[in-house]
Length: 54
Image (cartoon, rainbow, N blue to C red; front, side):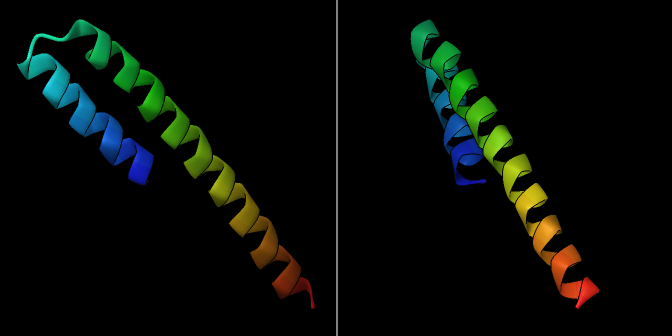
């Protein structure tokens, strides 16, 4: 979630300063944050399923 927040901040800064490189790079940071967030949800879900089976 932290990477998503950093990506949003980079997007805002990049667009306000008209720095298209920074704004474009921030999309990768946001995407990476979303992927890691989904991976974390999957891992946590598996842990919960293991706990409920016991």
